[in-house]
Image (cartoon, rainbow, N blue to C red; front, side, top):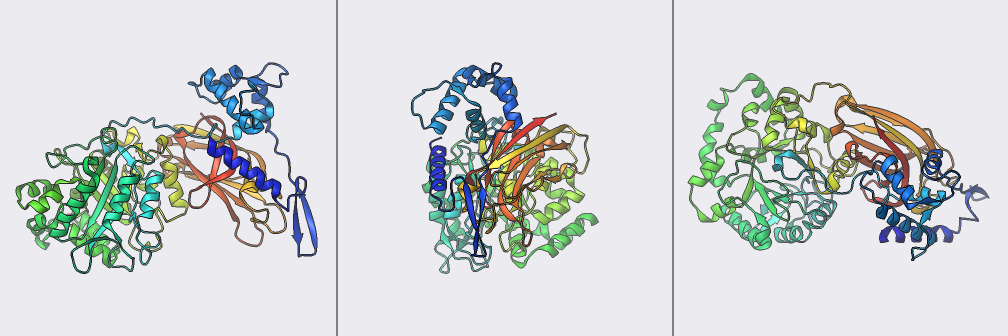
Length: 607
């Protein structure tokens, strides 16, 4: 709350001291010859706000008491747990902010106070802000906030590697950090970098130390470190020593070797987990299973699948695939039978055993009764698997973990559509967190759910014995009604000529539903010309067949007749987390950072 007060005070001062703000109006210079003056319209409560105030106060009353505010919160806003004490605290906070009163001098709200209260997103936000999912199920029952090449600061080919993006990811709530491990030129140190590229390396110890310091800055739930290991046997032993010394008791690994079921996020609070493929030295005996003779026995459908996958791989991916393809369900047993203390220590630290598909896809997606594992697929592999083995993918993810990663040609660190993976139960949709754009906004939206803790419980239908078929179109389960009243705050966050040199901005709002194909739709409001505080008062209805997977994406644009429309802010919200009633919806910039003052006033209702 203190930060909100500071932002509002700074914004008010900025507006007051703006030389172009002349007694409630803005001056715009036309061709350097003459000025155009535009009045700043006074923001007024929408009619629905006035009606709500009247409905919950006594006839003709100009003030809303704490008891009346409590009734409004319970009945109109659906916050059934709101108490009289909560309402009193809200009134105190609103009066303090609006009138700069430090003592509780007033016990009620005027209509204007009530309107401003509804516009404070920290007091009247659109979604739940606390962890409320059951966190005691196995890890495979959750979507997990996952990064890809977490150490890269920019593109995949030539950007610097650093611990800074790892820290930023953890602060945002990301729970899976990926590190690519490579030996240095003298083969005696471990570096983190994107192999076979021009990326400048960072030391492994820097990355591990940063993870230890920031792992639980935002969320207490476990951090999983996925290692892409390209090391010698000696350096693997060195990594094991570094990991154990850095994390100490924070590090979790099973004493008995392989797990038959993953632990729960609740049981792993404040713990670090390692996930990687078993050491290559132990797997040489498995290579004969990948011989042409064995491959020839597989079905024609899977042969075509494997060939398409190989054709779609970049050279770097193909080399990684060759080194990883020796993983199968017997790896745990094979490892336990071998000796060699240095590598066995490294292997013992691996809680989630990993691999990539090899051979027949149906075999790769097989579910073992006494073992769990992680399988990695590229976005292209997932699309093909979804087309031919959708139910097998869903079945696999009920007990095991599926990680999806960007295709190798995404050199600019762009991202892909995450909803396909979520529809099939994939827990780890690995994203380039520096790849700003609409796909990443969807990722941000999904993991705003459940208090932003980085773990979102999968819908029950993805865990049922009767397998969910993502290709089936279901009947409408819920209908979401959305009303966009108005917006405000841009004049406090941007200069008066940021959007248009000669006049105030012309804003409109675009609304999207992202989710299963049957639910996806987009709508937009009319354009409000020359107004820093546009009022739309427009309603939209969205029938949803799978509301559990639906995301509401909102983007504000400023209309430009001669060029591409300017970006005015965006947000993305998980539909099932939406709180009913009149809500303040804060907007974010392209990178997902919250704008200090820019907000929409909206109404949400479920039928």
